[in-house]
Length: 621
Image 1: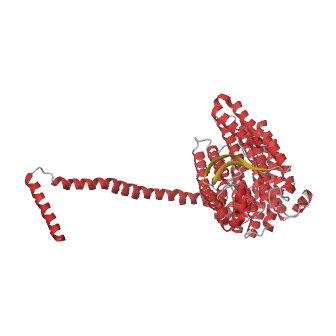
Image 2: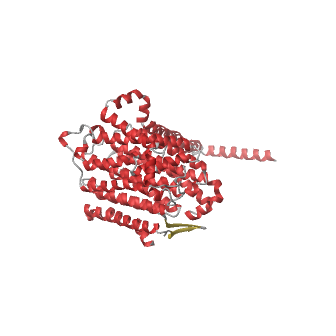
Image 3: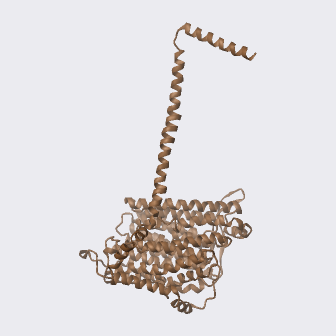
């Protein structure tokens, strides 16, 4: 089986190398063929391994030793358990759909081969991260997804906005990664090993150090999974092509932080303080970012802020020790969020790259297949019973309600309120884009996207409904960790959901969106004007972009200017370089007075010298 394990990450890597280095020779068809084949092989192998693991066969071992330093072995190895295989299947399936979708979306782009090489490399990086059995390989995958996301967000590198966005993502993630590598350093210092099994085994005896280690690791997760206040990079990642937006938001980079905390559950369970911080950060992110989505008109940014909010849900589950619920929502979210992003991309293609929802409307008649798949994704995101998002979201809300972690009451209130907000902004997008009177250029009427775009939408819409039906196996069993309360079956869960507050909040959110954007379309503007400064603060994303630009951007310029003027010009150039030159010049000018060429001056100088010498001699005696 080890060969099959190796095949999972290496097949996409092979496709990336072929498309990246030999793309011109292979041509467009050859490039997308080798990369899609690589990801397809990886997906099929992942499914095979998934079935094998369900039979009770797991693996934890080294592939090879990279180096040995003292008593520490740095290895490349795999941990294949139920958490790993679930992530493997989700990552490879969503990536496969994105690869196929890209054929249609990027058909006319001159960087076609390069894009396929990047997204295949992205898949390899994420697989290395989730399959790791040690912190070294985890860090390799962690940094690799960061690097490739930088390349993909700035894929259209001739656009200043794209360059600004990928630099922003890179710099914000460097802040998070600084904390992450500190956490790994602390693990090595205290445990003397980077192997998961060794660390987890010794953790109870070093529980006193867990809070610091867990908080440092979580700083890394805050960067990768875009949690408040390191969330600012994710909305700007929309500057990249839509397929990569879907891949980043659904199955790769932003899920890395959630997966990492779930994998480190044996450590976090030893630190209630760390879990409380995780819980509070997730709750704030979920509600605050959901409110921002209500104010956005760029269709991709609405979905982007939705991702931030849903990641907040997952983080709340982690803080509430409901690790299985967090991973379950990660899975269901991957499917319905991929549908929403790729559906938005289908609309953008049809409208000749128009992204403003105020210039859409009435698309249901022109793009029925896109509409119905997006509607499925929207219903799932809103948490309507029977759809995937309902099962995972309700499990998280219930976990927050029952949690004994300090701050659980606050988190429960936030995620409960967020149900209404999520339903409102999601169906606001549906009503503005697909219903009502057309607001686009009638001379260029849209049409349904080609099959390479709509087929992945349909295939992703299916698990956006059906994947939630696995809740009993994943959340309320020992599938991952910490089985939940007793599970009475799928229908009992649905019937309970119909009478629970989240369902009625979701219905109220959908009804609110319908009233404001289908019936009284004049009200949203009036409400915004009535709210005044409060609306403006939310619309400006709470001013974090401006704050960071002032605090870090302008602050760095002030520090740089000070170092330039005081350090470089005054001290180095003025004192050290020019000052030394002036000192040597002054000494030379004094010495030159004694180099006149006149014998009587030399004799007088010698007499003075002898006189000084004798004076000092007799003074000592």
